[in-house]
Amino acid sequence: MKLPSIEYLFNAFLKSIKTFPFTILSAILLTFLLFFTIDSDNTKNIWMVRGLHGTQIGIPTFIAITFLSQKLKLSNLKAYAIRIAGLLLLCFYVMSLPDELSYIHFSRGALLTVFSLLLPFIGISVRESNNLNYWFNAKNIISTFIECLFYSVIINIGISLALLAIEVLFDINIKENTYLKLSVFNFAFLNTLFFTSKVDSFDVSTEDKEYPLLLKNLVQFILLPLVCIYLVILYTYGFKIILAQNWPKGWVSYLSIGFSFLGISALLIIYPIRNDKGLKWISLFSKGFYYALFPVILLFCSAIYRRISEYGITEFRYYLIMIGTWLFFVAIYFLIKGQNNIKVIPIALAVLTFTSTFGPLSAFNISKKSQYNRLYELGEKNEWINTEGQWVKSDFKVNEDYENIRSIVVYLIEHHGYNTLQPLLKDINLDEIVKEEDSRWKKKEAILEEMKLKKYYAHSKEESVESYTPIDFVERYDLLYDIKGYQYSTSISMRIGSLSNDSEIKTYHFNNSDITVSFQLTNKTKDIGILTINQDSFNIPYTAFENGYFNHKGLKNGSYRIYIKRFSGFKTEELVKTDNISFDLYFNTSR
Image (tube, rainbow, N blue to C red; front, side, top):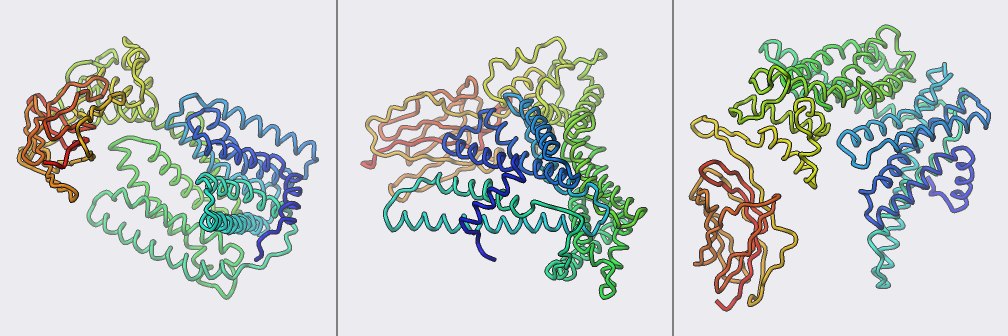
């Protein structure tokens, strides 16, 4: 394998521009946007995010459109019309992104990325009646991508080492951003250029149909034995839970997914040789795998059902449901239709991915409804929601449902926005409640405060339930420290191992000076603890804070000055318990 020459790169660029014009333009734009982001660190600019996301999805999407045009044998005019339609649709999507992105938008972006990567395999399936041709075309896409990625890695390593040699030998300072830009150029542009120059045509007259020996050995000696091992483990575990009459553990769903994907991947890889006379055990496996898959799917569904019945549907559980649906469909389809149409695998996965992304059956819509309904049921059960369907804003008794309700409210705020709760609080404008807050965390805390859900609970040694409120003090960013008269400073962070141990003391020794620092909890409402430096003690007060900031002028004596940077813990009606304290210590060595 030879690395591409400059002439090869130039010819490849011309060829790619002619065959994949929109793909190359997307790669060029993505490269320049990443360059600009590296230089300016402008990742919070929504226009930059739109551009990066759109071009990243555009590369595989326009590759798929080119494959589709070739399969349909469209004229240049019609091919460009489809490309422009795809471009307009992509622009419409990225322009619909709001100025402030949420969890949903990032998750939807990840799903669309998966969907776009499946599109090329769907593009080459159009008007392809020969499954063997489809298999070799799909194999060429994957092998070509791996080969081009190898080129990009070698080029990136080679040039990076050359730049490093220039830095070391000639004392020339090369910015660290240069190495990052080099990687972007190689993997965003060159990799796309190599790929599009090598996969410019797919037709039914594929001549090179020799099955790679490497794939045969990979499946025969590695993948299929692993699948058999997983199958034995899952079946054994299935018999165990039947005998014990217990629900399966949630972790078994991941093993089931791994087994299923590994098995389907192995079957796809051996598709051309599945019926070879010399490989009877592979033929037997390919025929029996989908029968063996059904008990695993049942085990998988049982584990997911248990979690959903207890805690409702979230986005992650929804994705597991979709994977189970896809596995069930593939198993049923191949048992009924036989293994003659492997195109259905990427098509079905793409359909489910797109369904999970948009519409009433999307992961975000289903999970929001599920958790909102669960919140409503628990609220009615505990009479925290009145007969009019409104939230009762009062101090609630802290119990197990209280914590579940609080978790649901936090989930809805963080994943679907605080306005999801507006129907429960019709007499209050939530936008007004949070308008003074400058961060998502503070907005969430304001909503929890409004709903009287700020408290946590924990079990004490007597198994009673104790209510407490978390505290998290941080220094004000606009404070100026007076360090006059002190020679040295150090930063200290001390973690208290147990909140209930009043006598616990942590001690730190510094080698460069004879200083011993210890901290002891006092468990009082006015004092947090006693900080001792050598023989000098300081009472650390519990100071009321505003907007999350700890505002104080420091603690000092003749030898030391202390500025609290942060402390966190919990506050009850009777005392303050601290688990972490960080401070700056200024001192002299003359003592």
